[in-house]
Length: 377
Image (cartoon, rainbow, N blue to C red; front, side):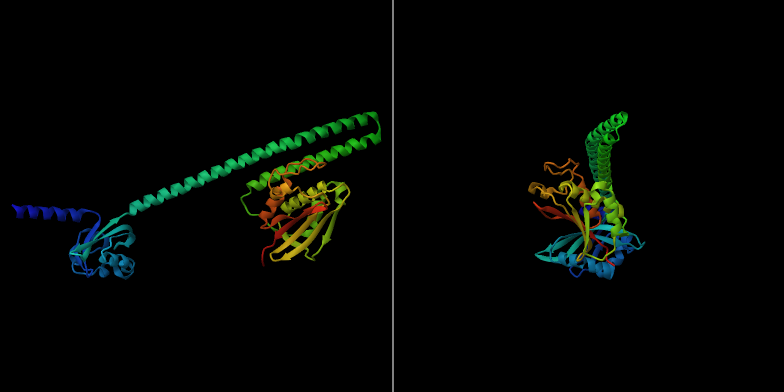
């Protein structure tokens, strides 16, 4: 009865191990195969009976054996091994596998080790899909946050624009009404004042619009700037031409270099230089000069534009946040602004790989520097 049961159990045990998809085997202390199931035929194209007595090196081949050898030696030291491996099959298909080496310890001596290798290719595929979906979701969430921040920035810019432009437009309307009255009275001398006031206000409105639209564009700009070889004197000329006619003569240019051209985005640098000059003129006493010094640097290779005013200096509390958006001076006697000018200057310089900095400030004036880094070669 026991023999019958034993034969029946052996039959079902062999049936079981030959039908599981995992490779099951036993390798002795000399790494020779003592048992293998049918899965080895599917994975390696070798029947179990062909493996008996053969060393594991012959089954795996030199490359795969070299990868597995540390785990084989570990199992023979009595240390359980669990690791992943890509196993090439006879059909050329690469199978991702999870291998488990279990030492067989008899009377304190390692007699060999059991091997179970399970294919996890499908799991790896699912894992890769999940990672891809997770990455995609994170990308979409990041994009949504960026879009939300961008919409908030643009909304804030519209609020700034509405606030900054509404009052100047009212002032322009009042100036034009005064002009209508002067025209009706037929007094040519009375016309001059209202015309000049209207021009000044419209210039202020134009500058506010330019800066607000520029900030909206710079904040959303995903692409690198397009640099061109630009004539430095032309840059200075167009930046000065953007200033009020009465202020252009106050800008004194000093050249400390013979360099005639530099690589830059002309439109952006025009905006940055104009804002810096306008800021210097605004904080300098009427009629005093603003100096623009042109020089170059070898380390790093760069064009330097230094703008010096004759104002009373930057408030100490404002210095650390000087180039942040929305920061403005509270000095008496200076016209109100959006706090965008120096922020635009900083952002333009960052796009050029350079920077804007406050070199010095004090009761006799302040000096700002634009460092426009030049491409090598």
